[in-house]
Image 1: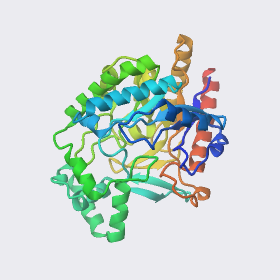
Image 2: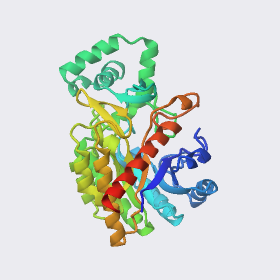
Image 3: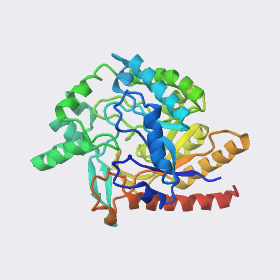
Image 4: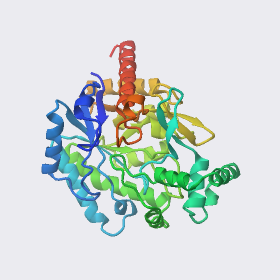
Length: 396
């Protein structure tokens, strides 16, 4: 049995069609009902409507990515109890429709962060990058967050000042738009004033508070997931360290152990994202994969190259600093073990996470950074070949 090869599709507005996706060799679709506001229930009718569209092309809806966690749940404020009830009902409705894997994250305010979405790679394709000093320039001189300087060292502060001094108005706007870019699947984003307001909401919430809130949330949703036969898969923080003074609690091995211990259940599992965790110098991806393989419910495979501490750019799938070979080998052994044990969660949906923007895709409109056709297709082909080679070596 091989990994289930999947592909993220943003629905009818995605510039990449299901027909094109089918020709990549992927069989499973990873998607979400992006049109439904965060916190509202996904009805059976809306789920079935999307499922029918996918199945009409000979594909299956394999994974939901994501059912967004409303900010009030993360803060446990205002109507958070009602929002959790809605979340549980969505989980039940998905299970009723035969969709058994849900990816979600618990990152406050920002879903992911980069400082440049138009980096020319060595082969002429376009990739993304995160540089701490550039982020500091935004944080200190544009956002003007109180006491922001305390979160950076002297070298980063000097580079941030130098970088900011070289920005004209056009470049400042580009930096703002890059950092405040909305969730994948949406090109909506915060304005600077809106962003300041939502940051202020977390003034009294630190790592401990957010970690406790996540633990409570897990305990509140996993019983519904167990009842519905749905495997929850929390996505790690991207990048896996604090930004803008916000707490981040899904960033390292200890964080993962804590949230898995909150409810010891196979329905309470991980999205093992090698790129997100791999962009932290403190993370050993092979060790993490070995430690938590039995609780991995979804796999994102991509690679990063790190430089200057926490800085990184997105590399080709089989290049970079993450040992994709060893991670995949661990997961293939785990899949084989699950099959032998008769576990129902042995599909191991995997998708090539992100891909460089290659020449043929550069004329397409509204491609979300990292979600081109040809870049991801190259990644999927490479990962498929790597998987076959490992399987032959292991004779599984």
